Amino acid sequence: MSISSLQQKEKSLLNDISRLERTLASEQKKSSDADKKIADSKTAISRSKVASTIRSKQRTIESETKKSVSAKSKVANISGKIAKKRKELGDTQVKLSKVRTEESEKFQKDLKRSYDKQITKMRQIQNEEIKVVQSEILNDPSLNDKEYDIFISYASEDSEYVDKLEKSFKNANFSVWIDKSNIGWGQSIRQSIDNGLAKSKFELIVLSSKYIQKHWTGYELDGILNKESSTGRQMVLPLWHNVTKDEIDKKSPSLSNRLALDTRFNSLDEIVENFKSLL
Image (cartoon, rainbow, N blue to C red):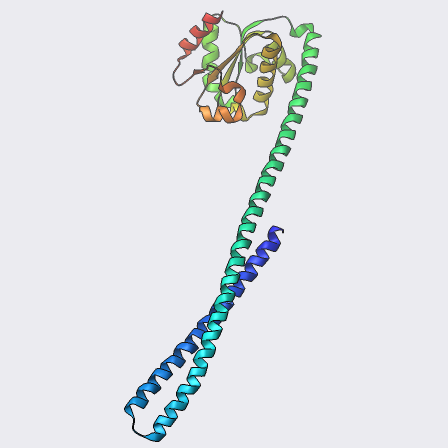
């Protein structure tokens, strides 16, 4: 049965039980009233010596006894009906709960399936775009004339910290590719990024809450991971910046198991020194 039909049945049973309980209470009162009149009449007979009074009370006892018996019979019958209705209600509520759980699980599965399809499609489109841009770069001599020690991938919201990081690397005489310095007016962003990735020895990823939510950083990350995978050489350098492990686990599980430096614990000088050791 569907959820709507089970809900309708549940509502109907609750209404039936409520109506029967009101009827039961009425019959119980009738029985109680009759029993009281019988008791009062018996008391009156025991105290009276007037024949007419005794006969009157005896007639009352007979009449009220019939009412009491009838009411008690109805009480028993109604109580049985209520018990059956309550059992049926319990069975219906169990079925309703089961169907709701099944519907919820189906909805979650459909939602996940749809989400997975969208992610797969987006990945395919991005990979195709990366291949096209990489091909363009290889065929454009103007984009292949310089190499870099390190490529810094970051979210624009973290620019204040990244500016200091770039300065520290340059002060240590490392060549740095960073978008604000290496993408000129009118140049293709994708071509410039892919050129920077292709010509950099290492890719430093400033992982923050903003980074794992944005499109362009996602594009850069895909390119970085593809490059590492195709070369078979470790070149990804994760740097956590005001982000928790739970956020990394949820949004970028491919990076959560890599040893990373953390801006909360590692100074700029320590980060640069660690990089020197790689070269």
